[in-house]
Amino acid sequence: MIPLKDDNPSQLTPLVNYGLIVACVLAFLWQMTLGPQGGQRAVYALGAIPATLLGDAELPPDIAIVSPWATVITSMFLHGGILHLLGNMLYLWIFGDNVEDSMGHVRFIVFYVLCGIAAVFAQALPDPSSQVPMIGASGAISGVLGAYLLLFPHARILVLIPLGFIMHSTRLPAMWVLLLWFGLQFLSSAMQGPGSGGVAFRAHIGGFIAGLVLIPLFKHRNVRLLNPLR
Image (tube, rainbow, N blue to C red; front, side):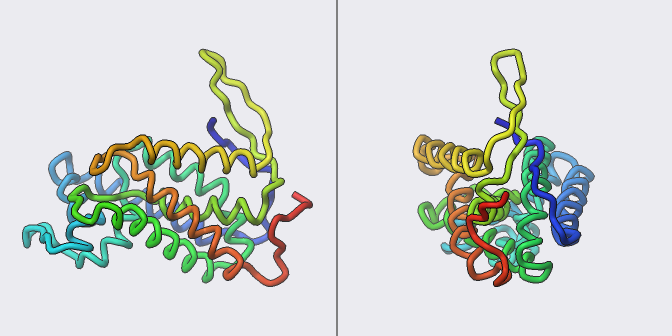
């Protein structure tokens, strides 16, 4: 199921949301200029690696261009491929504007970064010796999804559902779209072997839960949770 748009116009121009999308796209274009080998070095240099973040492992001096703690932030702007980037930016484009609208520009960037940090540690803490670098905005965006679920569960989301060779479009409540998404992350995490690479499902779960926890603290006072009018 692929979300395409929501029927939930925002009142505030989502400048931060636009900026995050542009930053991720520019970072990806920079990665592409490095070539395969240089791109791989960038992933290890700027991705969050549990073993260097939580353990005693160290990168070679020519790769360790930033502190391991700084990679908690830098990792949010790198992506492993065009589909990785497009998928993340699609979700941020659809859901980020309304979450930014609910709290304002400054609070939104702080909220986004905190969700991303929570996602990194949700992935790293269960396997602190892992040397697999984590990259991608999906952990922080998962926090945006968690916030959207509490803010606008009744908003209608236009989704594309593949039925064999036929693509069917329909509108579903955001509650069902996002709960299904979260359930898939949870199931995929349970099926994923320890220490394996690939998709960081624990980061998605951690970011989503962080969004649920943080949104009551970050939203404007006049913004209702579980808005029944959407």
